[in-house]
Image 1 (tube, rainbow, N blue to C red):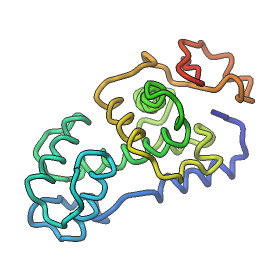
Image 2: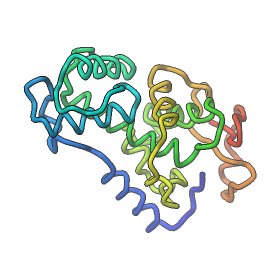
Image 3: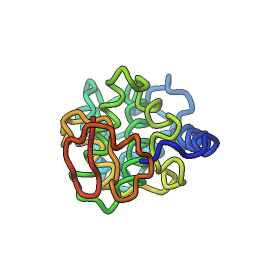
Image 4: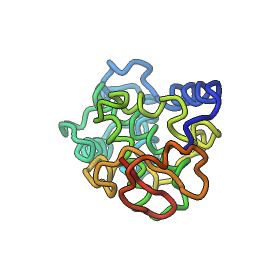
Length: 208
């Protein structure tokens, strides 16, 4: 991670966070279920396929397979498993999508544990009073993640990135609460080296 890049670049990253996903419906007050519009269901199913919860092509029909996929997702992210995609489920889908972009941009090529660790840092920051109190806020904080500054956030995540995020949501934190990480061979900000290092996973050192 780098923290001292130009602020204008950071603002570009914030813009990307705001514009990547959400699918339909435009208003998160709409709940998706069996009676919903076909195109809205296709958008949902496409997202469920990307995240690894649905293993059939989108049909536009909110059947038992889609409902079960939604329930499995709700279980993994700590929501009531009602199979209906309301505002809370849409928010979690958004969070997973944004986090997967960060994980892929920052940690693709790292060991799987290291990918989960990056996702866990985002969740840890959202719980910390020292950072914005939401996942979108953490991700859009200027200069917090190199991937937003250099454009790698816009890359399409692979399924490993999505799985790493959901594993972090399910409680796996290889960092034991760390809120920082950096690559000691490429980091240019001297301040990051003042943080208390906890452990190294792959190329990244995780710190408090």
